[in-house]
Length: 308
Image 1 (spheres, helix red, strand yellow):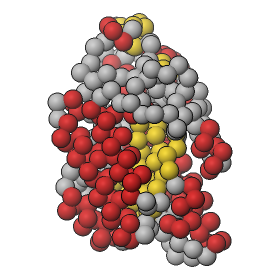
Image 2: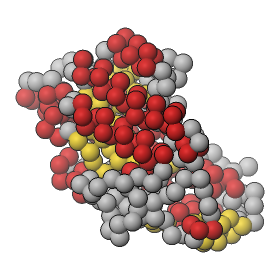
Image 3: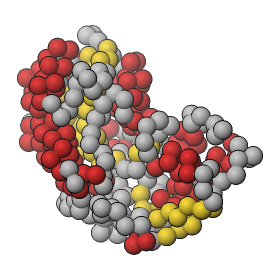
């Protein structure tokens, strides 16, 4: 069987960095940095894809500055929509499969139950609108793709809620954390592991059927909700993170956490009150269940350098 070539965008980001590590066992990985593949530059995308000729394109790069997007929508849409359209075009020419990551922010959060893939999207922020537009480009392309909507992504590197809370908890006596937004914290490593598993499944299916990975992936193409199982609030997430940090370093003095409503923490971009995603389709169709969020958080914090 031909070893699949896997192109990863955003290799220095949380998910991209984990994918660059996890996917080496699934194929030949090319994970260029931004100077070699810049999603804001159409020509840069085309050059990278045509040079490497991948069987898989894992698009883990994105414009994720949720509040900043409100003041620079053009850049958000250039990266989250236009770049996805170009990637889809190039994938179609090559017969490649695209793996893409989207967000709970495509929903307005007004539903009382977890959102399913069939629920109507209604984003309330520029970021959410730009990510939905990228999803729509993929769907319209008729290529084989896996669009994984996820939520509250964090990891032991980069910029994310977990690292911010761990840092501030050692610098301040009190932290006021929103307690009326509900969702599932998702470890970037688990998204990379999910991607590796899907690639292996499709490659095995292609080998058994004597077809290309793109042909093998067509039956399962589409959108899947993929986040760690269980649910909490931002305050609950922070509380568990500090509990684990205190357990690991009992000598470190940490801030007290005070729960507050969203109204007391205004931001330029609106956040969904309900970010819970129903991931049952992932289990039914692909046979994959994501780990429980507390279990993954414990493993992630073990990778964070100890507090000084």
